[in-house]
Image (cartoon, rainbow, N blue to C red; front, side):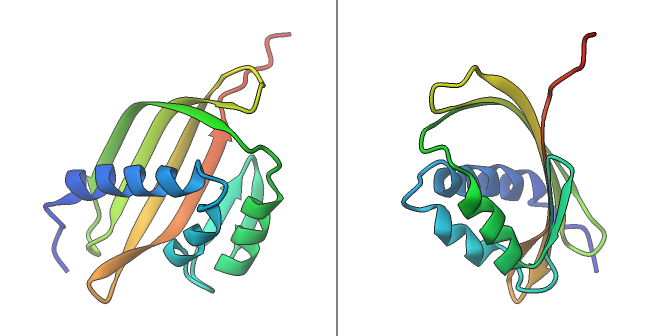
Length: 130
């Protein structure tokens, strides 16, 4: 398969759509459509999860209601299978907590003229300064 030359537009469009759903507690459940029942993996703060049902369990377990998010950078790369690697750097604040930097990396896998999230790694950027 050849490289997808639209990788930058795909990456930016995906990030916009993903966070629009994630950041709205009433829409968050619709993220299930972006993951595959078996073939999707998520690492959330070091916890490994496989499959859309388990990923959605994790997302549903998050207790915050309000998110204030600033995206600093979206870097995308084409993959040789037609997929897209996306790295997001930003800052978020949940409810009344202090804002924190975060990094989130996605791998979009092509399927039937569209994509699903094959890999999703999220980590707050917290450093032990002791």
